[in-house]
Image 1 (spheres, rainbow, N blue to C red):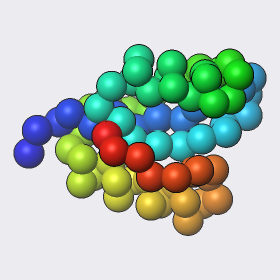
Image 2: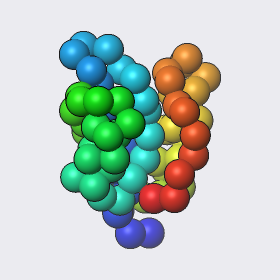
Image 3: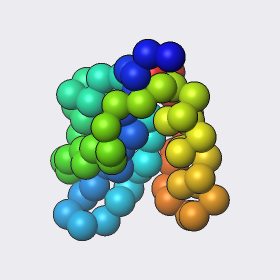
Length: 73
């Protein structure tokens, strides 16, 4: 399995406002900055498979982490 997915938290200050999975952190950070008016991505771990990243994302939902909507990688 290719390791092309990245797990991340998008933060404004110390607050996590979005949790997600992407294959392009730079692009995704720019998209979130437009939506949230600033902030930064904190990468979680190293690149992984898409399946493992989506599993992690579901775990984050169960822990109450904010996820707005599922977007394509």
